[in-house]
Length: 392
Image 1 (cartoon, rainbow, N blue to C red):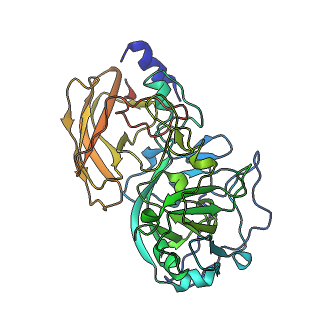
Image 2: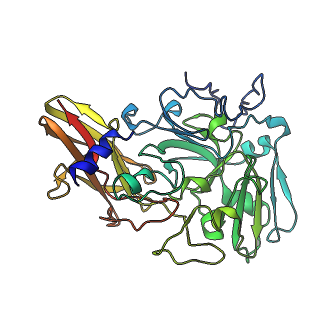
Image 3: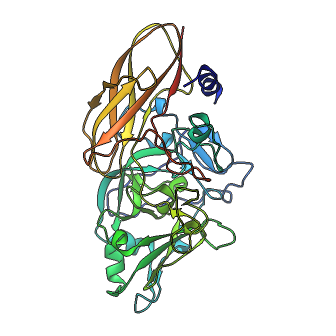
């Protein structure tokens, strides 16, 4: 990396109330005194101070605020399509319809809570996480919110397997696709929506979530109910879920034809999409340091996080000479099958401008590539990121 590119990199750049309750017991999030926040005033309910504010629709986490495997809700990133909604649970219901079920099934919040739930730890990541790196690292800007490395978090989620709900609705054997529809505004369509294939919908890890980190799901994260599709891009884990459409045909919507689609020379169109639909996430790693970082001369214990949709992280390597040589980092603490891993290493910092990058490898042998082909909307960037550090 040239000095010019490095200097460009260098220049880039309380908590909401949560009610706890015993599992299976209804605990409502009381509607706020005012209506839902409006763009330009307060698009979210949580305190934005710990975050990097990305316009009116995003709060990017600062990884340096995180020191454990589980991301506290107050530090968990937010990506909205309009504003965080304030749903009165008494007027809410979940409907399951479509030509692959015999008749519409409607569930209340109490109906959902009455079903058998399971809890799992999983990371959740925006498809555009690291998007800014297409420009900062490769010099080719992509469209959309210029996320750094913090549009990701790791939490414990409690919910009902989607498969159980679809089975209760009488899903037919010839079902092909499942469309998840939220209540937030997604013009020109009514409700933000993503489509998943039937095999992913029936995966026992695909949940309809009503609790996050042991507490009632917060408004900013989809109360009263959201989907969780582990290992897939975050837009698939629909917040404020209200409708599910099950079809014997492949379903198409804006968010799998023109949006959340990799559009570029390396991505031939599929079906009605303009390119390759963004579904499964990619293996990534990032340092838990401010961007750019400033450190004193001397030894430092530096940490970070790595994750992969294919399973646990097997190793993380780090380099401070633009990848000419790599050194093994230490994986710290346990790692859940669907969660992220924390790594640490000791770095002897000398005076001057530096960049440190990391590269993760998972148990399936996947590793971060040297180059990611450009796509117009900047999805799924996962090259090793040269993190700028000034040492004085």
